[in-house]
Every structure is written in structure tokens, then in C-alpha cells.
Length: 510
Ligand SMILES: NC(=O)C1=CN([C@@H]2O[C@H](COP(=O)(O)OP(=O)(O)OC[C@H]3O[C@@H](n4cnc5c(N)ncnc54)[C@H](OP(=O)(O)O)[C@@H]3O)[C@@H](O)[C@H]2O)[C@@H](O)CC1
Ligand SMILES: [K+]
Image (cartoon, rainbow, N blue to C red):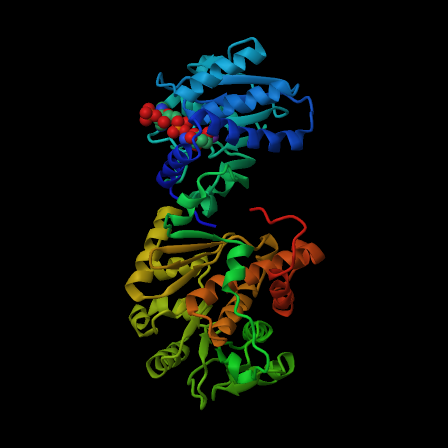
């Protein structure tokens, strides 16, 4: 799914109005009716106090339409107009009159702190103060109202965006925004919704298709995509009949040290389970017996050193090399990694201590082949690119790093983001159960395996992250978040392939 900028969405609104020959009022009615339907289906007529905070622009207009429809269906509604400006939009004004026809009262006006209503934790709040039109800091008293609503512990549904949130700046103490339980957004999610620091403001995300012009949406280029099943299906390469194991490549997994052999065992298993034709593991001597018994399908080569990697020599020509899991960052291992980089130019996946070594020895980065995939977790990423001010700054720095070194960076997190040049691929599978030891080792194996099967490295990263997360989602249903461990993910990657083309009873939401 494309993720549009707010300028593109505003343009999409305009184009839709022209091409569908409808008024902006009708488009607002359509969008707000879809929100109403959703809320109505959940509240099911419950007589709980609903308070709607409306701005004076079109987001406020949405709030007034939702309020009118709720009143018409017998709900207890109080609508407030937050008068932060005198520049009321036309569609706001029209719906201001319309709600009065139903309630027989004008909405209450809030002009300052004295007008703030009491909010109980039993209230149901609809936040329609600001949407994508927010373009400057909130006035002091409006910021206080936002904090007042947040303090209430009431259940909050934000319309289009949590009010106070800019599309391109993180909210913080000085820049307050509504902390919604649910955000119902129109047509396309906004990038900020997927950044970790925004999670506490967004709550559960719902994207509503309000029928904006399909042609405009299809033709408009974006550099951000959300990866759900339909996108993943397009990435899959069917296996051919009469295939030979050589058709699916030979992956070489290098890593491990005394006490950390399990990591490469997980990576190797995931590489095999994702479909690589052959896997060879290169580990310190101490890994030999463990690996032969935990992953009998893989071949094992060992270093001359007992406990850590010191000299990575092999007489084979792998299609891809994955380096780093459990390797440590000792002097010998660093030197061995350096020799490996200088002597081989195979496609590479670098994880964990591989990234830590690159962070310490920055000049090694230029030895990485183009399109190498790096899979850092937040700590490893910070060591690699330095501290960032906020999540937007992090993306800026990673894009710069990716462009400068021609690398693919997989920023692991609740929504893992794959960065290549200026393009972002935001994964929408996975769950908190996957925050478990070794989960990253499995991901490296999945990506390595896909590269070995001749997927382009960028596709392998995007598709691999999707499959890894999807496997976790399928397993969480069977065994709970708590019960899920990395070995389960490695063992069950196949389920995510099966799921790719399984017919759903209902089409997948977001
Ligand atoms: N277009 C369509 O057809 C559809 C639109 N839809 C809905 O419209 C929403 C966008 O509406 P919107 O453009 O009117 O902006 P909104 O977010 O309501 O802000 C109101 C205005 O406030 C102003 N302002 C900004 N910052 C400020 C500040 N700090 N303090 C004080 N004032 C400030 C600024 O105006 P300015 O003063 O800069 O001229 C701004 O325009 C969108 O999110 C969706 O909910 C849907 O109905 C679907 C159909
Ligand atoms: K809002």
C-alpha cells in the first residue's frame, strides 16, 4: 500500500471532487459516514457519554458530521467547537448548522481554559480538532486542552490524525498531541504512524478507504510503501518443477563463538527452512558437534581456533554470505572479517557483531559489496550511524548512510523499515511475541536464503521481513506471544509461504 505525503492526499481530495463531480461537502459526508459506521458497529447503541472535540476546519467538519449521525442514531453526544481561529471552513459551517437541526442546540464553544469541560474516564472522546491541516504550533490554551483530554484516561478515537501531531515532526512535551486509543485515518496511513516514538499517540490504526480517485492514487509516485500480504504476494517467485538443489543456491553462514553457537544454528535452520538449496556453516571449532547435531542438513566447516573466529578460509563458492551472529568483536575476529571482505565480493547479509565490527572499524564499510543487507536492531544502528534526535532524524541519517555506501538497511522494530536510498518499505507483520532472543538471527537466515534463491537483495530484505513477521503472527495465535521462541519461527517459516496464497474469509485490514 502506498503511503502518501499529506500534500499528495490534499491533492487527491481535490482531484476526486473534480472527477467524481461531487462537492467537498459530499466527500466529507462520505468519509465521516464511514467513520460513524465503524464506531456504531462497535458501540452498538451503548448509552455512554460521547464528547466530540471539533476544530474549525474540515477535520472539525468531519467531527460534526459524525456527531450528527450519532445523534440521529440515539447516542448521547455533546459536541464542542474548539475556537482556535476565526477562519472557519465552509464545510465546517455547513455542518455546524446541520448538527443544530438535529440536536436543537448549537455545539458548546471552547475559547480558553475556563471553558474546558470535565472529562471522566467513562467518556468516549472523538478527537476532530486538527487533521492534516495543522501547520504551526498549537496556541498555549489549545495545547492545555490536549493535555486535559489526555489526562482524563477516557477512551479516545482520533479522526485522520491525533490532533497536535504534525505529519513530519514528533510530538513531545513541548509539542503536545492527543494520545489516542484508536486512530481512524483516511485513505492512506501517514508515515509517522509507523515510527516507534509515535506509537503511544496512534493506538490501534485503522485506514478507511474513502474512495479517492483511483487513477490519481495509482499514478502518483511515492517513496514509502506499507508491506501487507498483497504486496508480498507480488514478490514471491514460484519454484519450478524439476528443480535441482543447485537452483536455489548455496548459502554460507559465518559466526558463532563459545557459548553463542545457538545463534548461527538458528540462522542456518532458518536459511534452510526458507528454501535455500544448500547451507554451509563456518564456525569456531567448538561449534562443530553442536551444529552437526542441531542442523544436520547443513555442512559445517570450522576455524582453526577453538572459541572464536580467527581465519575464515573456505574452498567453495557460495551464492551469498551471512556474517555476524554470535561472532563477538575480538581483534582476531575483526581481522578475519576484514580479510573476508577484501577477498570475497559475494552478496552479503551482515547482522549483529558484524555490524558492531563495522561500527568500530568504519573504513571496512567501503569494502562491503553494493546492495549488502545490514540488519541492525536499535542499539546496533546507533553504534553504526550515531545518535539521532528523533525517529525522523533517524530515517534521514539511515537514508544518507544507505545512499553514501549503496547498502540496504533493515531497521528492526515493531514496524521494521527497510531503507534503500530514499525509499522506505514499512513492514506490517510481526508482534510483541517476537521480541525474543534469537529472533534476529532467524531473520538474517530468511533474508540470506532468499538471496541464495536469486531474489534481488532489496526484495529479499522486504519479503524476508514480511515472512518472518507473518510466521510470528501465525504462531502467536497457536502458542501466545509469551510462548513463542526464535526456534519456533525458524521451524515454521513454511507456514508464511502457505499463508501467502490462502484465501481469506475477509480481505485483510491494516
Ligand atoms: N479536503 C477534503 O475534501 C476532505 C478532508 N477531510 C478532512 O479534512 C482535514 C483537513 O482539513 P483542513 O485542511 O481544513 O485542516 P484541519 O486539519 O481541519 O485544520 C484546520 C485549519 O486550522 C489552521 N491551523 C493550522 N494549524 C493551526 C494552529 N496551530 N492553530 C490554529 N489554527 C491552525 C489551518 O488553517 P490556516 O489558518 O493556516 O489557514 C488549517 O487549515 C483532514 O485531516 C480530514 O479530516 C475529510 O473530510 C475528507 C475530505
Ligand atoms: K484529529
